[in-house]
Length: 75
Image: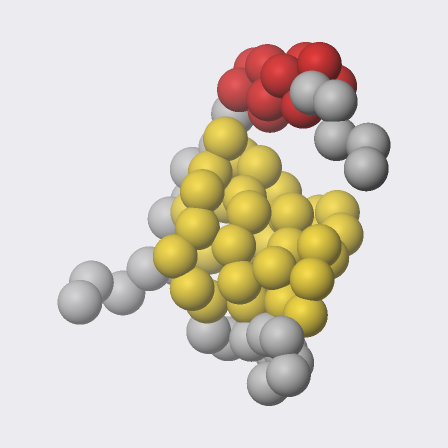
């Protein structure tokens, strides 16, 4: 597998944590020196390992926010 370089620009927050300490986090990440994107994925406690995830541009994140705001998620 190719060596992937990343830099976490800002840690926005964790959504959940599993018993092994991995957290599902929303961060702003630069992948391979590119422009940072919003990134949602599982991270090991030291951020040295990661799971598969989803990256979004600011415009895509704004659209997702609008869609989530429109949902009725109340119990």
